Length: 147
Image 1 (spheres, one colour):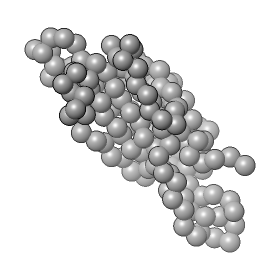
Image 2 (cartoon, rainbow, N blue to C red):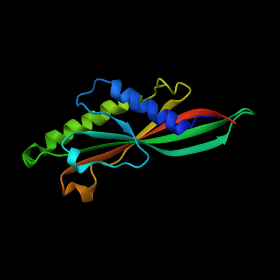
Image 3 (spheres, rainbow, N blue to C red):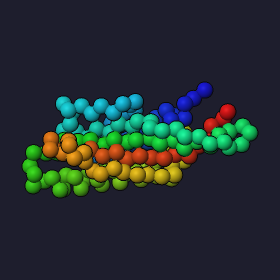
Image 4 (tube, helix red, strand yellow):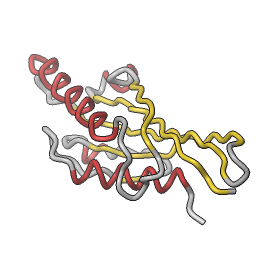
């Protein structure tokens, strides 16, 4: 028996790591996001299963909605004058990440499709004093689960 949220999260990691995007990174699947300060100069992308909701479907399957969080974090450069350009580039990367999975049936999870995307504000107000860009993209997938 497979766990749909893990299958989908792994498929997202594989798709993101295979994509050619404007900024290089290596996505990882985690259970608890832990961004490492010593690696904060590079973009860190962590994929975390968030929620698995199910409703009665057919006699053999339930309809499931799986939410997966994709966290994007980077410490901004010291020059405040470059802050806007750097954040613009990171937000562009977030748009590219969304484009990789939006409305897609990803390899390894072809029985699921991305039906929604939401993105939190592009920084954590408390962390921004430390010049850390942090945003979370929540991807919602629809799938069926055998019962």
